[in-house]
Image 1 (cartoon, rainbow, N blue to C red):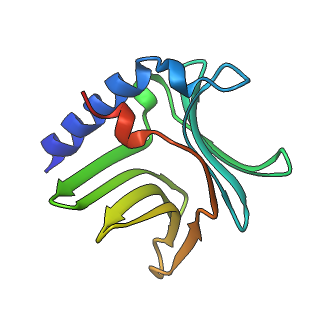
Image 2 (cartoon, rainbow, N blue to C red):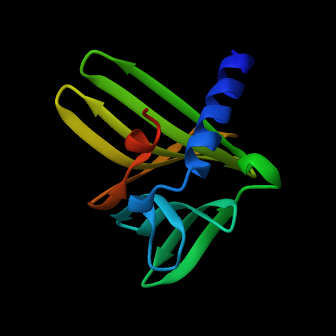
Amino acid sequence: MRLYLTGSLVLLLSLLSFHNSYAKSENNSDVYFSCNTKKGNVKLEIKDGTLSYSLSKEGINSFIFNSLGDNYSGFLYNHYTRYQTEYIYVYFVNGNYRYTVFDNYENNEKSSGVSVVNNDNKKEFLLMCKTVKKIILEISLRF
């Protein structure tokens, strides 16, 4: 299992580091996930070699989590697929909370957003995307 996660993370990192010209934003970062939620805009992007998750409202960041050191350390990736089903997760742990950016497809329905789980009491808070600006996790991770 550890080897699978490590292999998946290496694949994610190598593919994310490949600069996709379609992912460039106005601040010269590579945006891989961006959507509006009831709490603000959620974004997953690479800028200056750092993978960042941010939550902002009206252009002001209220929460940022950056990768640590080389190879986007601190973030993990999981991708599962079968007939008419696909789950893509990029996640990290900050303190007692696990944040998961997800893009799922199942039974002809697509859902995207962020899941925040308190690791102590296992309560989950979902931030579902209301308006999707950009989701190219699945495009970036395919050959």
